[in-house]
Image (cartoon, rainbow, N blue to C red):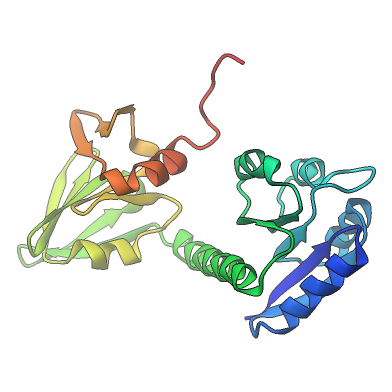
Length: 238
């Protein structure tokens, strides 16, 4: 699958440089180049774009303003000479933030990340159509609905699948079950635990509360877990 890319930058040398980089990567396809965000907006109305390389400091409409104006933006990599917008850009959930002049290895790192995200999105879209699976328990085939799972815990060669009103034990590895769960609904929070994202009731330091269950979060996963579960849903006084 080719990733269709749009380059948006008011400087011609910057547009041409990114176009050359795109041509050197086998899984990328240059769909167009725009000298400002208004032209890019017109392109998005008529074409399916997977990835935008977006400059920030542009006339009339900055890259940040443009991205905020889109309801369902493509994956975005900011390309800018200004470092000070990095934190603000990540609040917009961009793939990466590249500072000019952009070395090719850094560009490649960003597009590899975008490729991985698009593959996960495609995989999740397929899995989203499924609402259940079966496990073998005590010689019986038991149906498990995704939306009833609260958490899953590794128990040596087995896993314990906790549902809202029951629990089941299956001979399957946690890694195997993780690979088959919808990634938009579940997250690995510890080497021994997977949780349903929307079932978390409270986060207390490095502990997740789901009903009466308390689940530890691994130190190296804490930032990712918080971002995934809380994201932009934290309401606070401004």
